[in-house]
Length: 442
Image 1 (spheres, rainbow, N blue to C red):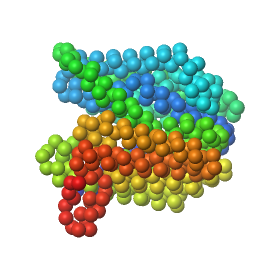
Image 2 (cartoon, rainbow, N blue to C red):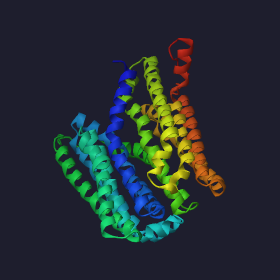
Image 3 (cartoon, helix red, strand yellow):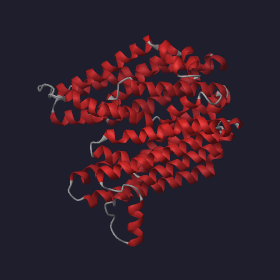
Image 4 (cartoon, helix red, strand yellow):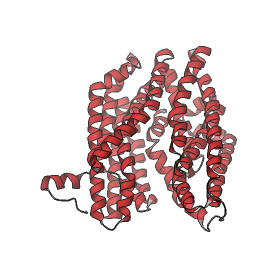
């Protein structure tokens, strides 16, 4: 089977396996909108956005590099280095959580209109953020130690089930006005239990790695070299719309935030279809990068780009046709989200067309090179939100996100071309097909 065919088939399998958990959360949020109303859903989404961002910050980026270093230490039999890495990662979570609790009176006012909302649910929010941070670290380390199911299931299976169960309990035990508070406490305690069970399993797995050798000299510097930029990269990429919701909480009422939050939830679900393409091809790209034939690497990137753009176009068409039905599930108040959702789906096509620039920069061990592009994207997002949202509302928010992601992707592409000397967009493969010749370097 060719790489392109395998990419498409494996992408379908991975997408379907993740879709279950994301779909369960989607349906739970639809039930919240129907039974509690858009206002309560909007408040819940803002709090969860803050929790997700905090969970990435608390380990200070060590959850983003855990898979890489766990795999390295396992392969080399350096259990001492692995244990030191884990002490540092979980120590960060403990210390930063204490700092957040102690400095809440300074943090909350800086969040604008989201501050009073978080203040009303401060303890469960901080508890959930700390537990989620532990889950992120557990998951990264377990994947690196070749326990992918144990790593992924905590966040992709058990957490969605907990969200659904938490809503059911909160709905049965409380009214709409107090339902969010009940649900947050249930999630905080439930995620803490998931994190604890997963951590016990991780501790057992780490015993399989020999501990005879002491940690190599200079490892702490290596950890920070990768962790510092990746915490920024992760927030700005994987949690882009969580950050956007916090920004928009100062510009839109909570019921409108709920509509935009649902649109971004749909976007995140379909975006995984494109991300899965590059996840499947990652081993092939590493192997090609390790070789001396750059044309082979370009060829594999080209195959991945064709598959990614094809998936993005198919998903864009699906949103054009099925978007109204998806939003109808949430109720008539969410019909206004169709145009913003369509605009966001277009951003997925743009991102796919520019190719896996961040991945190529990682292969070149140049994570810091991505930071200017990220700063540009976030600056454009913030500025256009301030300009467009007051006059255009939800459509303005979607246009701001589209512009930010387009300029960001273009800047990342230029950076990757400068660093690697390669054009990683889909253009070389399209040109090669038109001229019937192999893709070449830029």
